Image: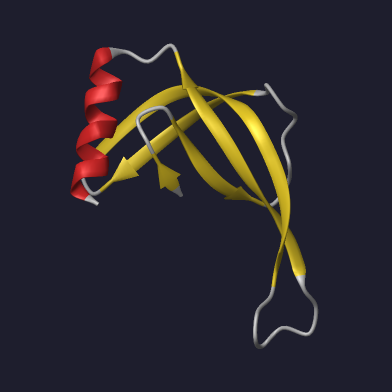
Length: 83
């Protein structure tokens, strides 16, 4: 996962519809925060594994955090700083 204060980029097995609302829990060590998000975009990508005979596909899904509280923003900022 790629994380910023405004959103996240996730890899998922399926593509959720654009603007689909999500609730996501972000955990790092002993810190966790639950935030609301919406799907901004989803792009299919092909995954190649050296030992695999078939290529699999997954999706890079961009989420935008919505209705962030100051506590949630602060927690995400601490997680980003720690990584």
